[in-house]
Picture 1 (cartoon, rainbow, N blue to C red):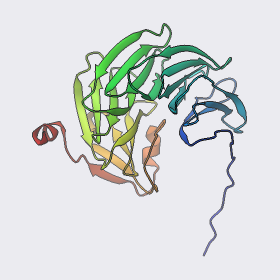
Picture 2 (picture 1 turned 30 degrees about the vertical axis):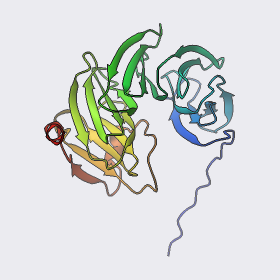
Picture 3 (picture 1 turned 90 degrees about the vertical axis):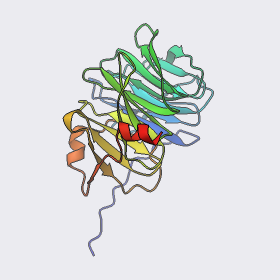
Picture 4 (picture 1 turned 30 degrees about the horizontal axis):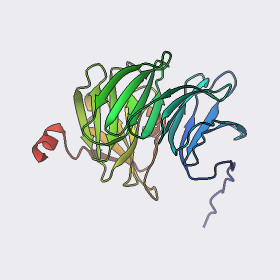
Length: 263
């Protein structure tokens, strides 16, 4: 039997409690960076290539569930049990706190740097990333854990949570324009691919599903083989879907009308 090659990973110490989210920045003139969220309440910034510690963001008092960087890696956003924060990466200081009524479980800076998308309780909010005002707030049909804005046109967003559905909404009106189901457990995280041609969802059922947008959005690609619940999905590039071995193509279990009939 041929022995499989074992690759020794870089081990990055520093967090004192479980790490629940990771985010790589795009490549910048200074390289690329990795930010991590942890239940220890302190997001950490590292060199994306070497894993070397750069800094720790101090300010949260509750568990930090989500974190991300903007495309220039100059600002970071974090979602926590106490509030959501926008950070100056160069100084490690809080630029602005975004107060919400419930724990913030997801934070995402839009690709164009205009908006911060947050999910808290049964609400998805969009904040102006430059002036920090609340731009839009929409009530969701269930408790949501994650939300993501379409990166190319910014005309729709997705949200997911405990009802196992991935909901698609019009950004300008908040109207639900689509709904997909394939998971068999709560959906903890959803993210659009960089080009917006697909989005990925990660669930308690241990699978990641990659959904195509556009005319053929009635199919999804299921990636299984994980050993437990999927907590976070980031930057599921469109090309990845075509490179995963043994991907099972499955039809949607239901559509919006079927859901309405079930209700």
